[in-house]
Image (cartoon, rainbow, N blue to C red; front, side, top):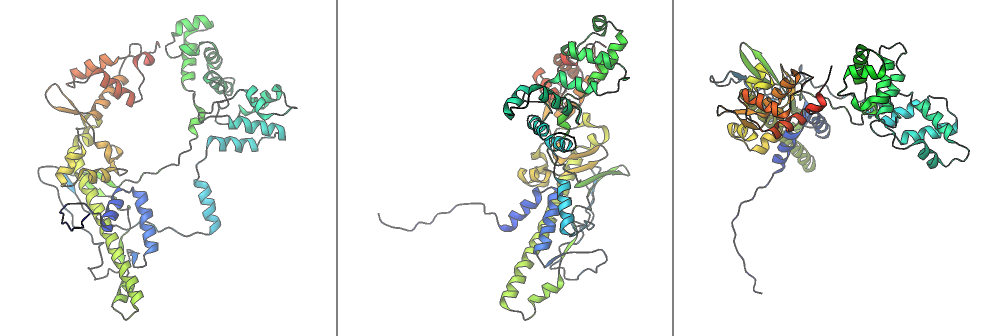
Length: 471
């Protein structure tokens, strides 16, 4: 084959290290960002935290932490955007404690599972070595809800202890069923509820009637007629009503309250406040410390140091500049996106979820002249503190449904309307999905029955037959 040279033209997207870092910082949550900043401060000697009482360095070429001027929104929209210091101070530095203290802190933050809690109680109980082994076998057979996945007979077969009989297995199980949370080590829902009732005080009102209902009429608790139950149990309808309320207060999955997930704390990235009739959007001043270049190390470049030292300083200087610029771009993008969200969702801030307007990523991306992927990164795991609670920025985006007047209604607003209608319904005649469709149409919202059912399920609201109460 004859070799030849050919010239081809084409376009390709190359992500520079600077662009990759900017994208990485933009998609970080506030807590992850603070950790990244601390790690960068430790690894780069030319980057340092600027304390409030320190004088500012005049070298503007290496200082990217200048405060940006306050800007006002257009007169057409009553939303004011105040540009705070893009890299504000007050994030406390992590103190380096002694090694033992760190180990204790690490242990304290480890998530505790249900098995961990049960084992801790087992070790505090006076058991023989054999009974302790039986107890561990039962704990291993407990699922996340606190329910047993094996019968006592299966536990006995698995232990293969010739001197142990089923009576001893049952005795150990009886003691384990007094562990916390109340209701664990039950074979099924009926036993779980009975365990919780038995551990209540003997003089608890309606306790005995509740036990009889759980034991014999558990399947009819949701739709039970107090008059019929009172005749079957030979008691009064009032006693049955009290017993039903007591049963509904019990926990059907007691082990679920002891989760395995680590608690994640939410730090708002932006604050929305109403001032003089206008909504103001501000960056959280605690999301990042104010950073600057260490002037002493930066001057080493101008001094007669070795080539290797000079290269080391220059590399870290460039890295510090890029990092600070990326932080500035992150906060600038975040504030732009949050401000546009507030412009769109002023009705939500003033009237609640029922006034939420339809909004998609493309709407914001077009207005701030950025790509949808950038807006997606800027709204993921970023939170806004509003007078109506703390919400993730993605909360304000929702699909739309047509109205009878030719307009659009947000799916979030429709869910709020469905929740409001169900909360006000007659529990003896709960609203079906078809009836909810009719009531929504009366309010100008046209939505199919299957859509109502989908939204109701997303709100964790059971169907009408399960919501029916004869009390």
